[in-house]
Amino acid sequence: MNLKIKYEFTAKVWQYTAPVGWYFVSLPLELATEIRAHLKSEEEGWGRLKATAKIGSTQWETAIWFDTRHKTYLLPLKAEVRKKEKLETDISITLCIWL
Image 1 (cartoon, rainbow, N blue to C red):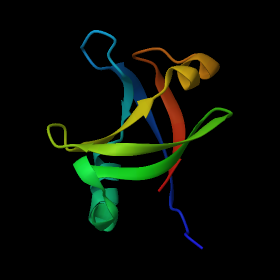
Image 2 (cartoon, rainbow, N blue to C red; image 1 turned 180 degrees about the vertical axis):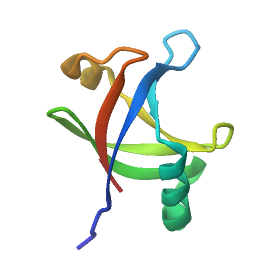
Image 3 (cartoon, rainbow, N blue to C red; image 1 turned 30 degrees about the vertical axis):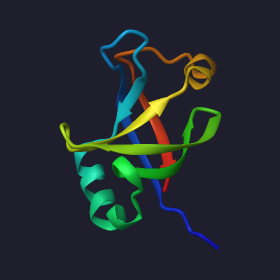
């Protein structure tokens, strides 16, 4: 059985500045530092960690990626999730991830 660690936090939704740019949430730096200290050995290519995420009543299988420029992990937000939960850029949301 693979036990997962639950992390709950609040962060702002932002959009990557590119045509049809993806939407993301950046994990708080303190949280990213803790995750990287304990789970770096589990990362796959490009600092990817498999995750389950939940915002409101929407839960999905995904991954977080470590962004070396900002020194934190990024959680991509699929269009389906954004639509269901009425997410827009610059709003703060509370969410859970399990790694």
